[in-house]
Image 1 (cartoon, rainbow, N blue to C red):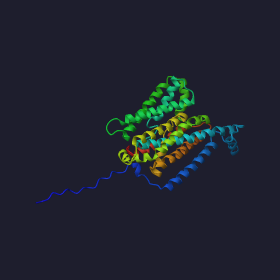
Image 2: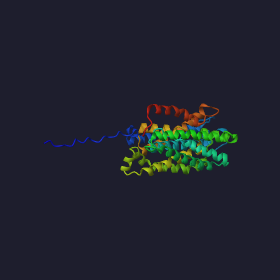
Image 3: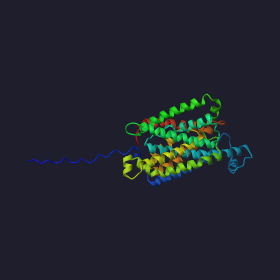
Image 4: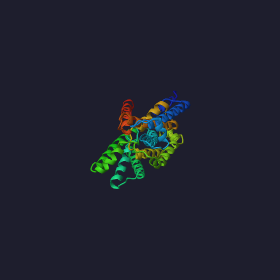
Length: 356
């Protein structure tokens, strides 16, 4: 009599690691050296931003201008470059971290404040405030831009969550792209019939740091600081989200709370930066992507590295825009678009839109 034996149990298939986890693994010492190198590069571009521009200056003018002297045109030019440099550093860091947060929350390598329509959402609310409520106060712009960024982020996530599978990277990217186009059209529809609004809005819409002032930086600083704090708090949870929601819950991570905290941090950073500098594109896409490829996906390192690299890239782009167009200047939003567009095309060609 033959006995029935159960077939051997095959070992469970191991799902391939998400692409974010298959990047290069770097030791903490390599990442620390990279962070120090980026900090040194940040200091160099800050000095270059103060030293170079449409008007040539000497080292004596730089020293006098930094100390607050405005006795000559050269010293006055240096005095104006100091807040401009500080704003470029702050906005670049905010956009770099905001992009890293969005990519981590959505597990989407193409996530970016511009591609997800958040920049255009902030722009639409600002232009509505200027047109229908006669807003001229920079502090009002900050609140309005933050509201527009928050509403757009929630809308894109809700639309991307519809249907089977929830908020997949592909659906979020499509929802963000469609929303961005729609919001851009609405902005044009509001300002085109109003010449007086168009004149004041078009320079802000390009994106730049030329109108920087210390009081403007002070007004937006609390929002950016809160965004940076929330980003650092959510770093460990974002590492778990890269494994998938079920795995993250198995590791004891509160998935929804982590997404909300990181999302609020991203909105504060992106909305605050957009309010004071306009919708500058591609910093949030290029910087986190390069840092992740070079130094790995650990958000505890990725976020500070993205902050430093974003500050370096935006400040260097601002210097380039001032130097190559002398005696005029090219707005930094145009320079970053020229740098970021080819990189975006490279990402699309080499990677599928899938979960990080």
